[in-house]
Image 1 (cartoon, one colour):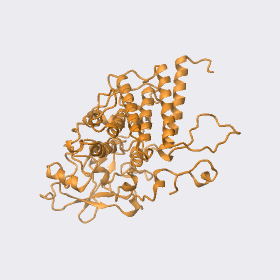
Image 2: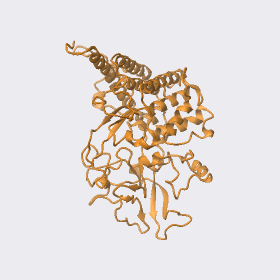
Image 3: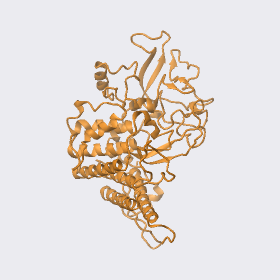
Image 4: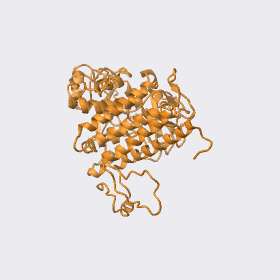
Length: 476
């Protein structure tokens, strides 16, 4: 009906319409589970109380719309919106809009969810095969159109300092400048870095920090794994932040980490219980809250943004990037064909894709003892997703639900790492002059998994009472 649009513009608008319909439905699915799939205008005479689809049928509808979107983007010549950039960082004015590669990648994500245990109670392996093929097609398209993983040196540009990068298939940027003290970043920058009484920030637990392997690839999630790493000379609990996955430094602020404007981060207490000058654990006046309970802060999304560091930083949320496509493929291919299996025609196995994500930050391949079977590699894939995608797009929240790991994890006690500066200084037992002690967080900081209704967010009861055809999830 547009009279002044070119055919290319019409194809682009049609592609975006299919994409938005798929994207909004899928985002609701991630939170609420399957719903009715609305693909037409509902009039006053239509029935609005529609039955929900099965998870698989719903995700198939999502995937079909993403595929159609990709086809129209292709017709418009918009498989990507910028020519492949030699510098690796993009600045086209419409980069905020999705493209054909984005649509294929989102299709792969949707089919991965459809194959996962929460939506695949029969553990139908053909669903994993379908997801693997879709993610491989998305990866091939991304590679064909010039997308690449950033190097370790440029890794943090995916999150701050650069508006768009050549790893982001689609992202949302706050723009060219963001003042550290405005409402956009109050949720990211803790009080101690902004002195804004309304600021908060995510404080990683010790459980999360343990997900970062040693530089030699030894996992540290359990006491047994930490003991093995220590026996191999790879880990020392009393000097815990050396010889680790480089992403730990990109993501987490820990005791004595160098911080612009702060020297070495003061995240410790003195032996007498007092706080040092400039402590990042000092609470605001007349408050009993506002600082980390775990002795850690997050840094992944903000870098040096603070009132003593950089006060204007470009922040970008990478809605989907190439690393996730590789991890989606690795997970699906491992479940379908095992660690050394690959989608038909693919030149990467599940293990190859996983190791590609690790290699770009100069982490070694997954250790051989974890590559023997689907079952042994699966925990390493889950761990890699938690590390690589942390604090992006609530991936971990959704991942532990689609894997059906949430009940066990929701009943696992969360811990921090208490740090005490020793008056006696460094000793053989405490080589840094600090004592590191794991401790259980207080009860008001723990998760309470009640029942399987918590796999999903609930609609308001008042809305549910209006429905007779839509069958809701179990109530919390």
